[in-house]
Image (cartoon, rainbow over the protein chains, first blue to last red):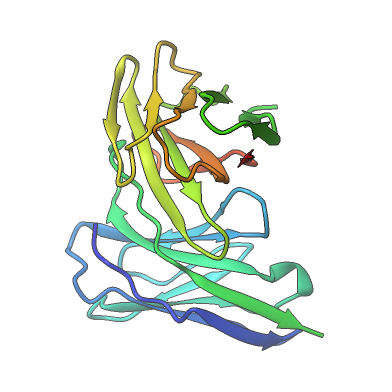
Length: 111
Length: 112
């Protein structure tokens, strides 16, 4: 699995958009970008994934650069409940192989 | 409801004792995973299993053992050989073809 780099922490004002960056410069052509988040003392929760096109669901939007070397997770209107650690992972889709997490970004949403 | 269940939520053991953490899923998922998380750190993979009766070591398997006798169950034993067993343990599962991994709520193990 390709290595990812994320800032260790970020702050965001409640109601504003939270933009969480992820660098994955060694990503290969068949690797997807996945995002999970972990609220304190709970299990991680899947948010969104994409290959090369931008994706949007009810939770967030995922913007992947044209060269696929970086991506941004966007929470359009952050709430206090979005305070969590956000993990960016790149891996090949399918197959029950290893699922490796890095350190993630600790997002603090402030009133 | 379908999901993945870890039990117990909190577990205390004396140093030198083996302890087994339970993970059960009714999602009919092929792959199951065990992770360890230390305070302020990310998740580190201990063991994973892609099918019944088969499992592979992750990055930090020393001092741990697993079994996969049934598709729905993947128990983790923390042995006395694990030097620092106090941690938050997370179990996950995913379908062979699906992309999304589902996590349990974790077991917080404290060894005194």
